[in-house]
Length: 432
Image (cartoon, rainbow, N blue to C red; front, side, top):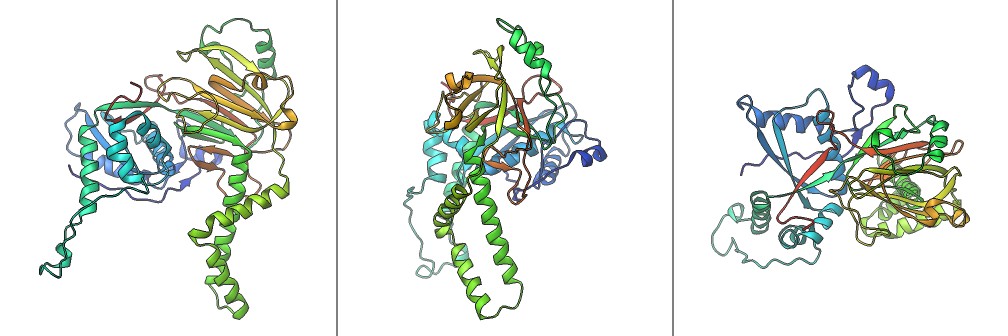
């Protein structure tokens, strides 16, 4: 196998609605990762000289964690939807965990061969590999010629994975439309929902309460979360960024003795082994600030086991939730019912704040729901953050920024009008 590597920063370029008008985008596209242009160049290079009409399979080994998976998903969707779309291509994705990768953990729970030959060697902290070490100085061998046993071992595992994994796990892709300004909530939809009785015959008959163009579209295939934990994470990452900027600022100028001592103290605090202590301090400070969570009005479409809509649920009262999770890939230790990433619905799990847990509400009575579409908006000037496949939006450091409305629905392929899938290869069927 020949290998082409793309190694890039995992940050994004967020395009504002005003910039979008200047770029003449046909579709509302996800944020553009730094890796996108390199990906397009590599794909075009691979297709050079390909006969017209002939289909090409491109195998992509994704080595990283949740952040890499979401960054690549954004690049993948932009490649499919944008003007640079390339025809006659079939992608196969191979997931290799080198940091926290919950999709890889899910595959390992379903596919024992993947667990033993990919997940454990690349991710386990206690993985041991015995090998014979060649002492180059004793055997008169040039140290540069000494074989890299571990590197060759891992490369063989990757090659074996790419060659032998013939089963495809088609992960359903969803999109989260977020609005920085309050989106108009169609009040007539509430009246229609209250009058509608029985089963909804078609998803086309389910009219939206929010129909405006979003500020950003954030694709995902694992999960989306809002609530206390997300706001705490945003606070911690913002404080971490402030600390790093302070150290960077001090490192760029001449320091007196007092500033030198402060600089050395901050550098010691930023060490990796002190991260748990730092974040514990951030959690204490966040709790003291008594940050209030926004009051949310929620509307969702219940789905049956085929993903077809059966009922529209809308609670007229605003409620405060300490946790709202939309799950497509189940995580270990999740509350609620395990999701199935190949099914056309999401698992909604909600946990109301103690002050709202006794209110008469559908989600207080049944906190777990099968859903195919979710719409929510907040009261007044309140805002919230979202955690999408392990990535926080808006990015930390953007003080005062947040979202006021959100719509989660299926990411549709404009050519086939079917829900888009993200193909990941496994050795054995994931849901056998």
